Amino acid sequence: SGNWTQVFPIVLQTGLGNFCEPQIAVPAEYAGKKGVLGVVAHSPDGLLYSCAAVNFVTGTAATNADCKNASITVDFSSDPSLTALVNGGGASSSTSPSASASGSAAASSSSTPNAAPGASAGLLGAGAGASLLVSLVAAVGGAALFF
Image (cartoon, rainbow, N blue to C red; front, side, top):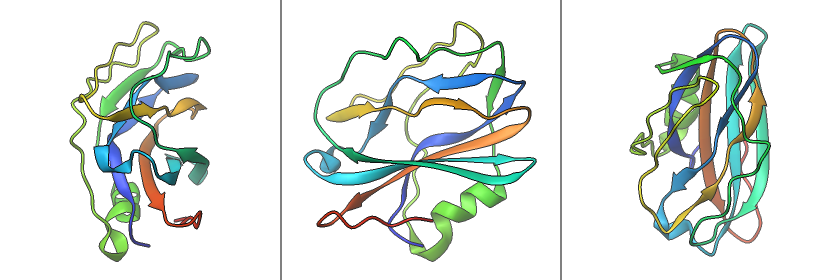
């Protein structure tokens, strides 16, 4: 419920293996705040959640060497279950990052220039036919909201 911001479009991963997006651009006003980065996969087993407490900073960091993609296909998609997580409870939603996701072994991406693009989705071995949603929330005083 409420206060989640979608920072990467919903994508559909087809095939088994890892999908890594090396940089996710977040709103500039998050710089200097604490928050939660959440990745949700809609798989045959249901919704699978992965969350991390983060400090939002300005600038970028080097891409982790473990950020590699398997021979999978990743396409921009829509998924009503994932969209409802962001839109439910009046949360703001944005799919503005101009990333081009091509999830092959040599996937390339670009992200919207931003003051705080260092958040990374990391490796997520989601399996065949999983939709992914990356969202975040800035926390006040260390309090975090979960879906």
